[in-house]
Length: 380
Image 1 (tube, rainbow, N blue to C red):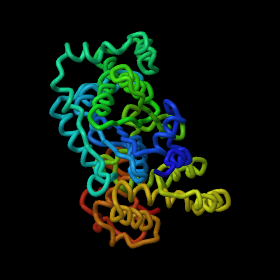
Image 2: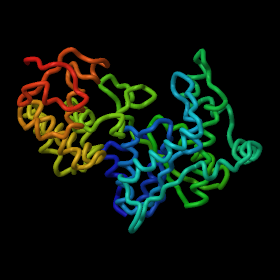
Image 3: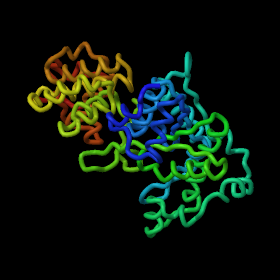
């Protein structure tokens, strides 16, 4: 086993651990079986989930055994939101999203060959448990005075709305996952976002209480916007991985517009950049920021990782063409529509039809507009 923990730390992918020294030893001695859960509370994963998939990629490449859990049961509940109760979706809707997210996860990991990743659904082991058995076998290991001290639970209890028993019980369901995977696959590490720390600890505590075993938890820092707000569906600012919810062009442009102050950190998290390459990139950011070489590399690699090389080539060609450095007529219609939607006056920016639309250089008349575009030609 390589010293993967050092690499994860260098990349800024470690925020908290239950016992760093013990986890280091376990990973060095390896292989360790690790899991991460993805709840289908929406139709798509977002970049917060991407961070966890990248961590799992690093661990799998280092020889550790990876389990991806898509929560068919926990997704019907949803972990508590910081400010308000979740809207519960139907079982049928959740099942549809389970299938969608499973397909989204697969390209990021190896599910065949040597050391394949494993895909599981927690509905398989929870739907047969009666409420009485759940309370006797799982609930008896938890103390309410500890549960209410979890950050989000405490905040919700102080709010006017409070928290329902449904969301309050979520941490028991997630803890049950860790216990089941420990028993079934000898899983001894759970990873997640830093806002999941309390839920991860619940799993660690349950495995210890029920089996007398010591297992590990590790979180990664949250990805935030320029104002320090978490990027995610609960905040309404998620960067979706599904191209139907966020086009590859918009996805690419987000990364291209990364601020100089954080672009190095983003490269370390989201790309394969090495310590040897980093000094030159840092020099470019410091001495030639106008070239935006670091941002271009970031946008290229993350878009390729999520949407594939063909989509990346298309959006890069569209980006060049819209600024007079390429042939607009060579672009495919969908990419062109996505690109125009990001321009001032586009459908995405205004949310309504615009009376004018800027046609980029090389596109002289509205007659050549692809289906779905609108407006009239305007000088710029």
